[in-house]
Amino acid sequence: MCSLQKKRQQFKAGLLRYKPAVYAKRPKVKYVYFYVLDPQSVLDGDPKLKRIRTKFNCYASARERDAAALRYCEEINKKLAEGWNPLIESSSRKSFTPTKEVLDAYMRMIAKRFKDDVLKKNTYMDYCKRLNRLQKYIENHPVPYVYMIDRQWVENYLDHIYVDGDCTPRTRNNHLSWLSSLCTYFVDYGYIAVNPCIGIKPLRNTEKFRKALDTTDRKKLFAWLEENDPYFFLACMFQYYTLIRPGELSNVKIKDISLKEQTVFVSHEYSKNRRDGVATLPKVLAELLIKLGTFNSPGDYYLFGKNFMPTKRKSSANHFAKRWAEVRKKLKFPRNYQFYSLKDTGITDIINQVGLNIAKDQARHSSVAVTNHYASKNQLRAQPELKNFE
Image (cartoon, rainbow, N blue to C red; front, side, top):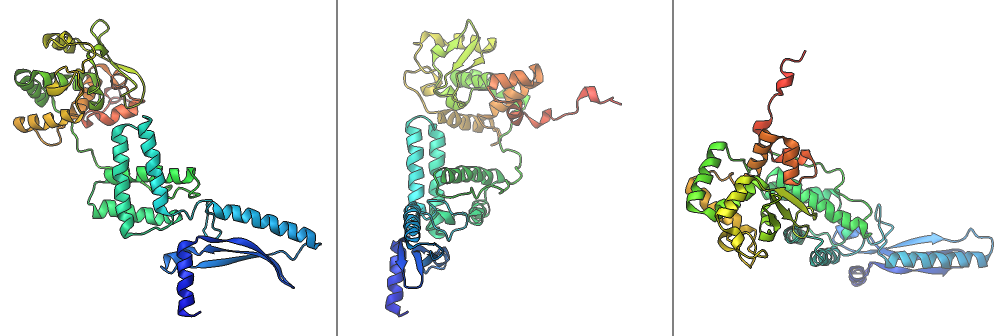
């Protein structure tokens, strides 16, 4: 083949993923042929179309043969139009869809789910961040078509995250979890036949960075806040006693609190599990609310608005962490003491004083296994009943 012809073929292959099936009636051989993009040629950087041929010589009559060949052409052309390629192992009907096109479709899908309140804002932003990082990697490690995202490619990407990014096993495992959900989307929408993340094992997690406060530091914190910052003191007390997540706390309104029932209502509109729930309001917390004059504000005011005081306008959930960083610096606490550490501390103390099941209910967890994940390692002790077991 001359150089000009070769260039033309490469150009056509770059534009076309297939050529439709045609029924050829030769004097001695009757066959259907069509062209598809050769996957290996794409990997080699020299994309070419490859011909596939099927003979139709085994029929008793010409009429039966022609009818069968034309039916075959119609079926093949329908599959080709949907992205099918017989040269791809475990080919799905959209395997030859350009990767960029598929990721753009995924982006539109998660944007729609966020708009319809199926995805929470933090989840949506996290997905966008991970997708952006994946797309930057693809720029240097091209996968022109979605079928090329196979297990080896996924493992290489995870190595890039873990080794080149110098991240923790937990971060690498979180990326694996997101990639698996992305590839599940590919499978569900017919882009690939099998999720390439299946069988890739997560790395053994190290202990989480965040640490529960010990009793001395907790008392020091509460004493300092009560004297110097009473409204943030209330916020920290809420985190410790009610175990309500910061994102949920920022949405709690005064009318959600019942002094009579000693409860705090958490609406499904902003709860993590999308279900209505209540947390018990201990007496010490109820008394602090009254002392600070919380109920002098209208019921539709947010409990922790600007400066952690009741306000009509809602504040971001991040303002808990920002203020906590300032307090931690003043009290010279270690960095692994975080605002959310108060929840770890609360769960640990509730388990010690009143039991695991009550801690689970107060935290609104789905199982005691989840609650145990938050508990301090100091609770991993021998059972007294078994010490003298024979």
